[in-house]
Length: 204
Image (cartoon, rainbow, N blue to C red; front, side, top):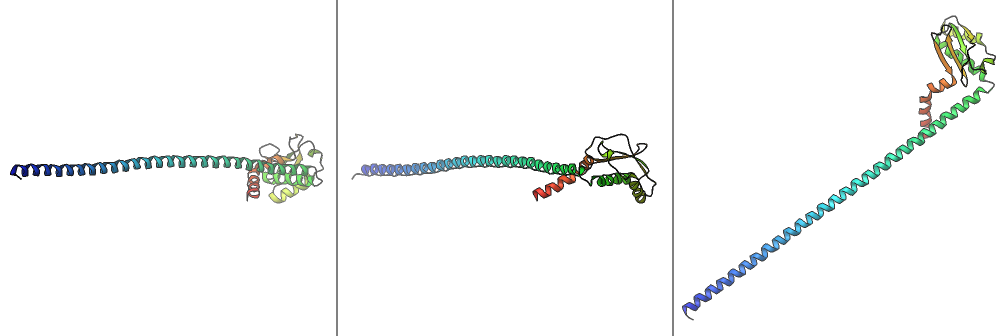
């Protein structure tokens, strides 16, 4: 083989080696790019999945919160209705008390309580039309009020009638002090306590 053939052969061999090297490098770069593209695609998919999952979790949380709020509102309405029923029962019992034989004594106790709260003195008692016809021991009440307050006390039935289920409105003769001790007024004053008691009984 001539020197020229050797040189040509060497050049061709080197060219083949370079071509193979370039081809292998290209394959490596392509594989790397493919892996990178796959990795990025996976990241995008994972991000979308995470975003979807988070959106669904938030949706579930909102649904649960709304359900809890609605349940609490319903419970509060039912609770209020039950408490009102309990208070109505108290009023019904008071109505039965008014028609009982012992009512006159209870009315005297209400008058005495109001008179003591005022501090005794010259007092007027306002009753409803029915109660004004009852036989009440006003002198006995006045005596007990004096014993409790130390103040000479006179109690007289007023000609003015009050519109109420029962009980009495007691005042000084000059009207400077008034104590409303009607049954309705007593229920109103103790309604908060009645509601609390009813709530404890009903929802203990």
